[in-house]
Length: 270
Image 1 (cartoon, rainbow, N blue to C red):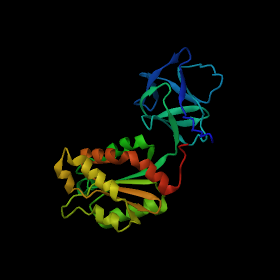
Image 2: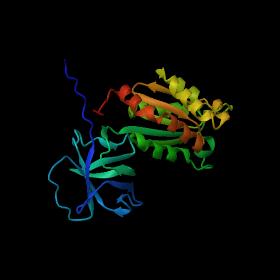
Image 3: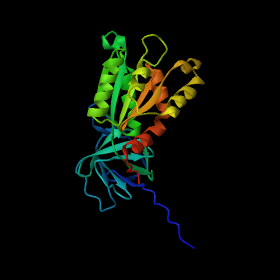
Image 4: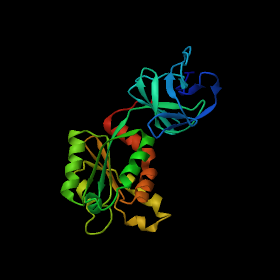
């Protein structure tokens, strides 16, 4: 009978602070960009199984069962609960903070290049502070997305399309999140602008955003949020309110990394 070999899961097999082994740790970014380990600033390292080097200053070492194949990738623990990125050699920094447990599974994720476009007449004139864009940037960390571009434009088909063409055709961004202009008022033109540039419509994303939020807010069925592809760029149109943008992104985020992998032909999880 033919043996069936199952892929060995990659795990975090040791958390060492220079004095003792830990079973869990809290990692986050400090206000100055430093790594915070259980509330204290420390250097952070990630290594393959090997004799551990001496720690000459407050540090933490994460020992990975299979190491990593490419230090240009992010290390995602527990499917994005905690993410770290390499700085130099074995030193890493917190990319997305959270609570990390010993034996957590990990994967290598390529960084998703992200553009965030806020569509708002008032925000473009400086009459309104954009909170939706920055909020989406924070949420997108959970899928390993790095914001490379950020713009605010008025509700104008031409201006929306100019930015999307630039980010897709020239910058080759993997993912573009557009927030605002998805309602049914006369000035809401984001879906029209995006559809004219699309190669394919990803119907399920728009449908999921509506039905997942309609339980709490029946008015969400009036949103015309959608997702399309243009070349190798995935483009999402989300509501303009911070709450609506957050809820809709969170509803579909579990599928977004896989969508980008398929669209760009990059798979580095295994």
